[in-house]
Image 1 (tube, rainbow, N blue to C red):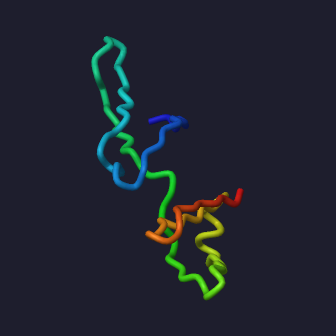
Image 2 (image 1 turned 180 degrees about the vertical axis):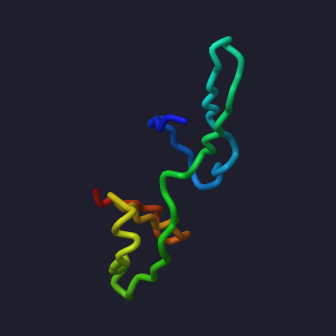
Length: 92
């Protein structure tokens, strides 16, 4: 019952969320499994909104306080159209 901290660097995209896990297995003094914790895959990125550009292709985004508390950076994506190619930018 002692507290512990574990850091496991792992990433998945939104489509793979919950599709797998990392197992943390605790053994007793005899080497038998005493407890198993499953750390499910969670996405690194999550959508926070959808925007529409103006006639010049510009947009603005002001995230709410709850988003700002949870995010250290942002990634903006444009999926592209037959006329315009895909584009992405990040703010760190």
